[in-house]
Image (cartoon, rainbow, N blue to C red; front, top):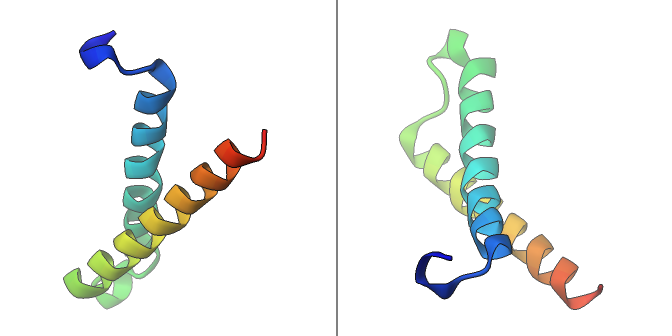
Length: 64
């Protein structure tokens, strides 16, 4: 495995990046008549969603 990391680590990293990106993209599509969401709000939403996903992954790992 690349750099000795487990496959689950790569899956977690993939989910951690895809969920916030998709949420911002979906919001841009929903609000496209108004010009989408701003760059600042996109960044805030991305950081919040990444934090939530990371917390859910940590809690899932702690409680098998």
